Amino acid sequence: MTPSQQRALVALLREGDAATVNMVKAELVQGGPERIEEYQNLLAQSPDDDKASAHIREVIGRIEQALNLGNISRGLAKLKTFAQLEELNWDIARAEQPDFNGGPYARQLDSWAEGLKASLSPGCTIQEQVRALTRYLAFEQKLTGNHHDYYHPRNCHLPWVMEFRQGLPLTLTLIYILVGRRAGLEVEGISAPGHFLARLGPVCFDPYYDGRIITAEEWERITAEVAIEHRPLLNKACTPIQMMHRLLINLRNAYIKRDDTIQQKRIDHYLAVLQH
Image (cartoon, rainbow, N blue to C red; front, side, top):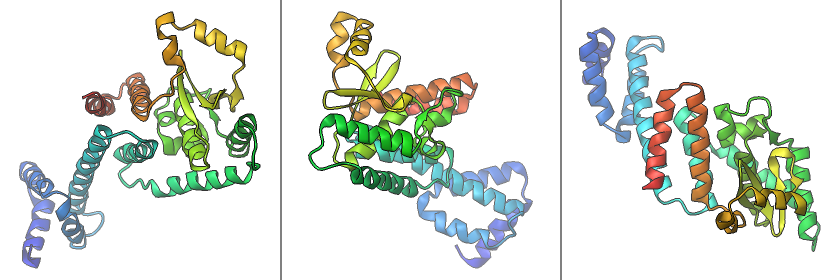
């Protein structure tokens, strides 16, 4: 686009009628991510509070949202590992906040893992590993369940759980998994009736309630709530796909409670891709 073409486009976006402006914006969006840098250069042609700038920023935002949607769809389609599950959480957060950067949060998980490793004694037992893990995340980092606003959507978003130190059983367990595995501990997620728990070896514990260890008697009560034919599944660790599916269901329910149909439809799209 030549300088004269740029000036003409900016003038059209600033002064054109609504139908023309919408048509032009649709054509600009079709340019895709390859044109984002060019569109950003257009912003220099007009003041920040100008109509043209607002339209150009909208075009860039729509392209970035479409790009992020594609990333999420591709990520869901190939989801197998917890590393991929982590990346998907950053992408899903970016869908709600386009300028979101998952890098600082990934580095925070790295930092927590280093802090955890420093508290693990050589040759310590699994029970001691669990105590170190829960002490570090629940009491030093103060990660706990959100008992006051359980159905708030941010409880389903990994970065906001890390930010506010409160979340759902699932998102808190995911943090324990990501931090624990960075530190060499094979933490797993267990889908319990109406709840979600973490497990390391034979020790089951509850990140939602500050990492409280589940006793044998409690596990018997949990097992009794499950139909006999489904009880073998209770002992199986959840896969990344299963955890993402449950996370999306939780997020969808949170939006339904808030009558946010736009966000609900977005989550429905993710679920359709995941279940394909």
